[in-house]
Length: 364
Ligand code: SAH
Image 1 (tube, rainbow, N blue to C red):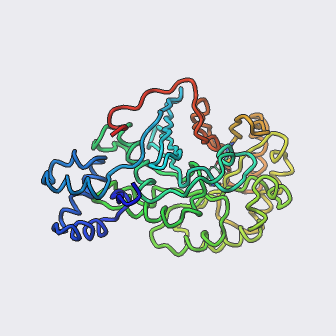
Image 2 (cartoon, rainbow, N blue to C red; image 1 turned 90 degrees about the vertical axis):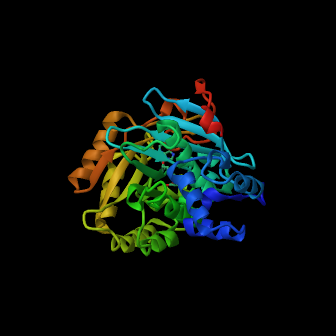
């Protein structure tokens, strides 16, 4: 498998070079690109516009799909979670979240995660491997095909969030390449403006992202208003403490378009970081840095053996109210897919009671 090249992770130009090396004209590369990303086909045998002999040669040297869907879980709120395996048998999870205006796909950037955030189940897996660009793109193809059918148009467009397993900024190269491939109008045509990347706070990459012309939106997971508490909840804080993180955010702010804000995510843990005092500290911190940001409050999604409980609704309201009274825009994120381990921080390759078998095209 290792010598076989995964064509889903190549840009259109790279595909042209690849086929030329096989003594085929460059337009065959463009054909393959459209088949993979516009028609969302996952095997060369389905690409009947290619000569049969060429398809045979492709099958010898390359592959159109490496992820296999093992299980698919359907939540009572319509959210779907896919548990897939890479060619080297590592878990990858993707979540499809139907929404009124536009559907959202939450994808993973790593199998497992090296960061040890104390409230996140993915941390329990440790880092298994960083995903390739092809593996990132394929997650989206699989979710779209399941929702709409192979090759069918996505009726309302799609938003993407890099908020699944892993730390996207530790998968920076794969991620940026996947975003370039997905933005191509001759393929999926999901532009960076429809994508949000969430980071636990890898400071040099925040600075780097600010220099990318066509870049995705940025979200930053805070979880605590002081270094003392954040050191405990998110150990990455010991490497890049709040002052450095917010200074990088301030720099990033210069790259925001008019009206654009970036997002801080704040998971609310009962009795740990959800007090009125924490809300005041958080508002003061953001105001002190004078950041054009909004705060998404995420009620903790509990999962055994995580030691936390979600904050009660009145606590969440009080926290939000304090932020707003100090001029900080705050929103409460409604948890989706909790019953199938699909919600934030719950991706750890778990099975639940109600898997449905993958459909034929997912297994392709
Ligand atoms: N590593 C990146 C991407 C993961 S995004 C990051 O940390 O941003 C996942 C989001 O879910 C993060 O904002 C994280 O703080 C939040 N989260 C993690 N575990 C959670 C849990 N158990 N309940 C609610 N939110 C959680």
